[in-house]
Image 1 (cartoon, helix red, strand yellow):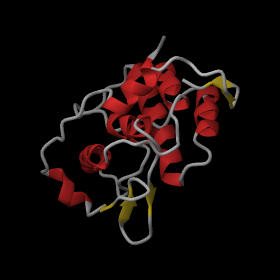
Image 2 (tube, rainbow, N blue to C red):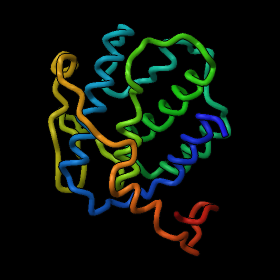
Image 3 (cartoon, rainbow, N blue to C red):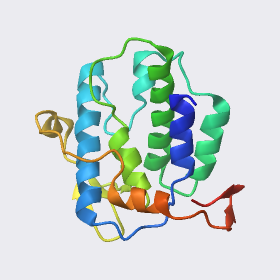
Image 4 (cartoon, rainbow, N blue to C red):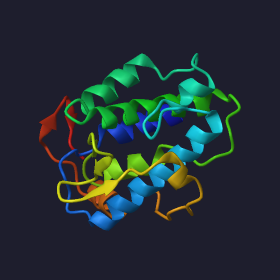
Length: 181
């Protein structure tokens, strides 16, 4: 199975309902996403941040399979525009990596946000510069420059809630043509 398909499977398996995940984990993941996004925006000279299509800035001719994009878009259609753009951007970035095209030696810009999604829902950007990371927790987005010199936030590839969800036996309930995992 290829990298882009694997990512599409991860994203379409997300349970978008808020989980009982420790808000500190979700904040840590969001901070790491903002840091990585800032590094990529700075490296690529993007005037958009934190949500932008990294792959399009490197090589706009490399895109994820439209069927995968459609599947993922449908699975996150009820989420904020920022979540939808993050999911599709992550797919295009996976396709770019898979293409073998040279890319800057920076950490994957989307992995922290994908892990955040796997740990119980999305996020929303409001018009005041705040990010609603969870129903009870918001944080300031800050400015791109604020994130460039921050140390990396450590997180496991699969945070605890995602692992717990993956270890549960499949449920019989059907949603969007797929059994819930």
